[in-house]
Image (cartoon, rainbow, N blue to C red; front, side):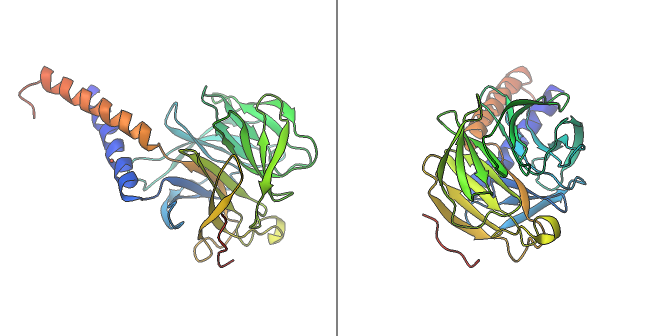
Length: 295
């Protein structure tokens, strides 16, 4: 088992380090109406299909660095459920395991992990959304506080100043939200139309968000620009990365996350090196501002 863990760790390191070195995809997105997972390039928004999860109507997605799994929850008045997703280093398949019901209504939303491991979520798409914490063992949501006024939050990220950043499609802007009491302030307006679904992720201090596809919302009444943008989570300044218009033809991406960061990969690589040296010593004979788009 020791050999299997060492080989698996080094395999994950090699694949993700290869992506990082080659400028390959470092974001993972899930399409709402199909449950398909994609790796997304932060250079030009090009897509690589990972696989079909079998779980449709996901409202959020986030990677948990504490256990190596992705988490997301489905939407619904009474059926919103937290799922755990496993994606192998080969990025060619995804498997889903149900964790449990949230116990609150959710119509899209956002999910993020604080540095201390706490899972924060927002149940966007309701008249007055709430900031929640999620139990990763049972799926149960606990309400921290409700946001003041009507907001439709489609993404969530954790900032360096320990505030949350929310993608609000009601007013088409970015919000800074307190994880303690859900108090918020507006960061800036968003130039592209967000639409009925979306997602947000933060990588090395740089934010990314996706906007809804052409058929988002009931009967396609809440379309977005169907694009990927990078942004500054402190100022809201945002830049066009690329369009999904030729590939994502339905509701669009409803969740966005990062894969393990380069710093984490470096530590994993060092761990592999140390384990390799230890193995060799014990068994000496055995031999990786908004620029207008086309929309």
